[in-house]
Amino acid sequence: MTHAPDSHRSLPRALLLALGVLLLAGSLAGLGYTFFRPALARPAATGPGYRQEGTFDYRVHLKPNALSDSTDLGPGGTYFARLVNDVQVSFAYHFGSDAPVQAQGFTYQASALWGAAG
Image: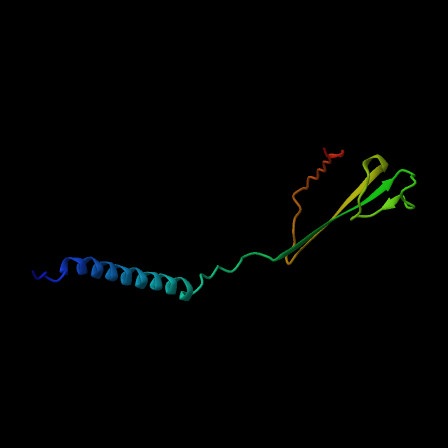
């Protein structure tokens, strides 16, 4: 008994291969579009240029104690809350502009929470 060639099996394989080739081609086209299209240009900024800078600083004043020779310490240290007498905080702000600026008004507020973690 002779069997006819399995043409019904080769058809799904051919369809899967064609689908795979189409998906690969579409993926490569999308990748090419993404990486080779020109970047979007942003419109140039209008108005005068300006510069601003702000800097925080602080000094920690300790109560007289046996752990530290100095009672006036700067940033970056570890401070025990029971030894701290007070903390002086400063903020310096500088603003510059290419054009004259009319100040509208300023509001400043500082809040602090002091205590031991835990």
